[in-house]
Length: 521
Ligand code: HEM
Image (cartoon, rainbow, N blue to C red; front, side, top):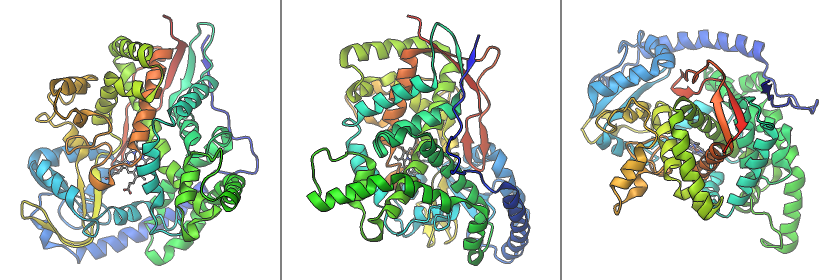
């Protein structure tokens, strides 16, 4: 008989993670009505002739363009593809509810976006608009981006040094959550399970043992990320002066931040005491994200409260992105089981020679290619390198967009361009193995999963390209290889890969149960 594995519910009664849904819905409905009226009036009187020359997908009319903004939320893949095919190399625009988005198709224009300085095309300002961090993440010093610097430096530098812990943790997490034995299939709700595995494994490097294994701590970090996105969606419907009060009414984010503070307080206080006593170095000094953040924190950030917020942000940026990517990779494998044997061949050969090491994972070119190909066809975002123009910006084709425009790159359409990827609509798991082999002796890093390019934008591009990608790619590849080497896996009888859900420019894998059994050699 199949056993259904459920991830246990949080067991600490004093921790509450639910959103005030009904109230939030009412408030957001009212806000929505007011906001739509405001937008209709303001956009009607504020056309921008600079943008008129850029072709529109959907309606150009200021009022009707709201229909297109609405349509983009569920028909984004097709709209982006249409614009791309009609204009490449060129620019096209799609309305969103606040602004026009101008999308740059073709490598020359993508290069313009990549090279634009932050004070002209700003990532921070576009993130501020979408995530409303002053009300959701509530950083003590919003100007200080030291956690991103830590990801770029220490987290990346130590991927090899921390590999042993990463592997130890995911082996234990998989064993705990997927208890296969006696040649029986175990049914696993895959998204929830991989979220737990990734949260626990990543936090082994973020905060160490035992906190990474604490179910409530994991739940807090998993739900915080979802709450930030949901709250930001509501908060941004309101005019600025009302946002603080609205954010306090609709979200439990402040109490979640407080819970994170309490989770890490004992560790942080103990470590600060050690710094006081021994300076920056002592025997057994922990080598984890928490320690790195504490070492870099300055001013108000150098406190339990400051570090806790940064830790929540690190989890926010890393856990869902990584676990959803791994889910997509598994779905692609299950939908194309002919890849299982060639992948096992590679994994078994590498492990025999190098064991489970970072150097071994680096030699798994088929695994790497499979991941990069999955990100090409299933990338989590339809757009990449989304920026807000703070000043008028002129592309190399002479077209200028005004301040206040969103500028972005149509990633999903670029990834399915036949001129770049022959048979682009087909999943070809070893596409990048061949490209790497074909270019032996030249720069082959171009086709590796960690390398962003104007043709592969899953991690963005340029100076803001994902700083966690070296960590994430290593983690996904190692876990994927481990799953393929350790288990037989399949979808439930009679079921195939679930349809992905594309909403508001994002792509989420559908939910499914996956069957696991210890590999029969
Ligand atoms: C497979 C997993 C991941 C994917 C697909 C992903 C994707 C991305 C993308 C597309 C961007 C935007 C880049 C841009 O706009 O130019 C980004 C930025 C970022 N990512 Fe990731 N990411 C992943 C994992 C991680 C992890 C594990 C961390 C942290 C440990 C992380 C931390 C960040 C941060 C902090 C930024 C903002 C960078 C900045 O402000 O300059 N990400 N990521």
